Image (cartoon, rainbow, N blue to C red):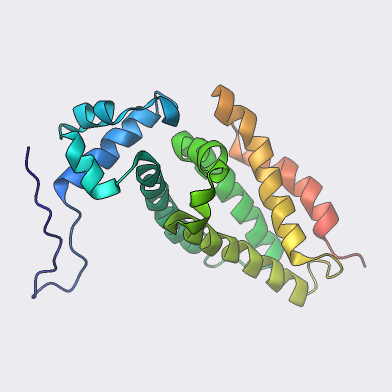
Length: 210
């Protein structure tokens, strides 16, 4: 099977070149398989068969299965970065923004179980992840939270006697741990209830004492 590998822009085009159809098919096939199987159990032969392409095409675009996994995760993260920036618009107050940020994280994990499982359980145990585009995108996501915390410290909503980096790690860690049983065992997850419980705990520690 052949596929158009030419990704050069049309001289009259002002937007990015579309992704080749074969690459799109491979990513879609991989996502569908991840809903049914663990990453390590998926073979290139299965991906090729599901996508309707040959295995050589997968190698051309992604080189190895770990790179394919990172590419899938990067696409999710790009979408989430756009969504969280929009979700926070018009919200006043750092704690209100933080509540929305926490809800967004939990709701995203609930809505996209495959993404959450990949991010929490798969990629970060591999050293190459920290040199990947995916890791750079997670750093951009971290900046969103750091900006909220910095705003809260500056306007007096959030205490200033704890390192902001430790606040960030505590918040992300709490979100992951409250979601983890639901992700692993495919249990029901209530973003509203989970957010309320976390905010009761976290805000009592983050809030600035009078």
